[in-house]
Length: 113
Length: 113
Image: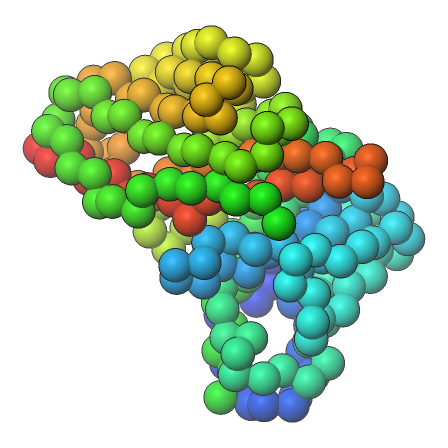
């Protein structure tokens, strides 16, 4: 089944404790992206990757890191999480860009206390 | 950042009626437009894409695009309770040769049995 797999689904952590949210897709998509979704603000792009070793900032990159060492994986790293990073996070992938429409992962609800 | 505006709703329609969801966007050069459906607690799911002026039909769904008015809409015919969800409009625009996407904050649709 074609899918984007995110883990974990739920995560509660403390301020400052480094964490990684994993994302993997099995569709051989070149383009991958991370979003956060907050009430009233909608989906906002954190980082995106056009292909292996090619990443760029989205609209709200502060406090996040990403890497794209393999085509299928695109982890999101929070080196020192803060409470304002409490949100619902989605990984998404597409053939070569957002112009082809996204397949989204199932989401990660992160709470930073 | 380009703007995409949607009425947050909720839009309530009786079962069997036509639901009309609207979206306006600020970038006159935008080329591609998408509608995603998001059930509560779930990830967005791509349901329609439209690239040129006019109507595009897929089953009970019709997307309508008017680039001159910078307006895109989604019609759902014979609305069913299972259509109750939040519908997100996404607009693709170009920045420095790269494709960017902006999501609206979504319209919540309630189909009343």
